[in-house]
Length: 160
Image 1 (cartoon, rainbow, N blue to C red):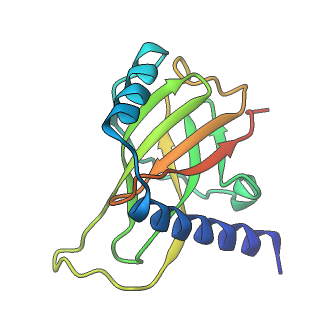
Image 2: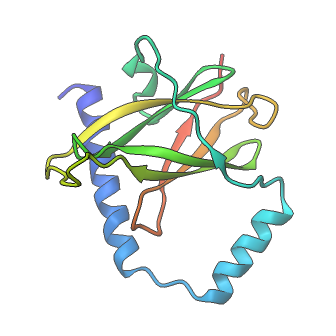
């Protein structure tokens, strides 16, 4: 099996587990507020809208093994998954620290509001601010899918 196929399979399994964990996971209001307070006391930024960039061709081998990669100092690529006609796309991005970000995803719904039950995994490229994100260090990316409380984690290796 090719490395790309293994990476895609692992990403799909991770998403399925995150969905299952989110359905039964328990977090008290106290621990949630402590986590939010801790994040706000660090370098955290308020969530801001994400700008999706149409890249000419994302080199999938860059994402292999990590699920994410810097394409340039202002571009970040990572895998998302969802229905082929109801893609999960980034809605907001919050910089937690220069080495960690949080991305809230949303589903793009078709006009008829009916999603197919297939699963596709595809790369998404977004614009990032190099003044807020240190592209020369490993970046931790937490993706939050709709209806899940547990994130899917990716790491982007430093930009060389």
